[in-house]
Length: 230
Image (tube, rainbow, N blue to C red; front, side, top):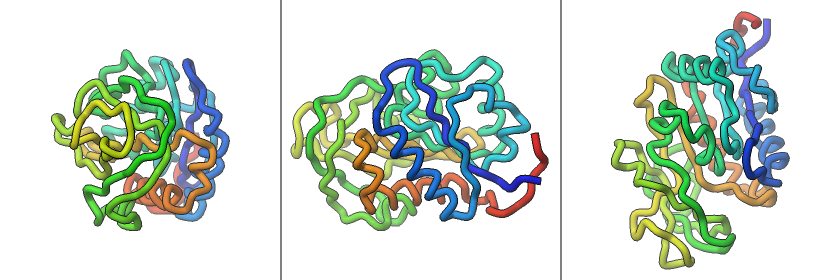
């Protein structure tokens, strides 16, 4: 029987980031470092109940547009509500725009971004596995996503914020969320807006951010545990 793995999903129906291959390679390595298998796919038919039962976590890696079938949505919702972990990275904020359940998980929607530029990331929770390794202010270059509403209004746990005084084009003021998580739907959901460039995924601090996010998302799902095959 196969062991639990991390399913890294890369399908796009809109803009496709050229960082996806680097991100997929990094997440595969991080999953294996955590003791899990890993599979990268852009096939929506991977989203079935039996297949997701074999997942320690699902990662939506810069997915854009409608990337799941109705059956896939049903399977993923059941997986999350049943205690599964879902990690959404960067442009996954712009995925499944007409699926209410995913919108509720995010707590907001993507609203645009200024040009790629350097700025500062502020750590709000220095104890979380995804942020504990970071300094209080972290110099970073990214697209600095803006959102349609503040996810904090839905009681998510914000981990990182952008310092809008350090770049141009922010729309949220001093409380500009970049990464957050919650367990409101039954399983664990984590979103990070960072990760636009291919080079990001070779930076140790960002890899540690993703590793911590994966560690938190898969907590309770033991590596090396056999599960029934699909």
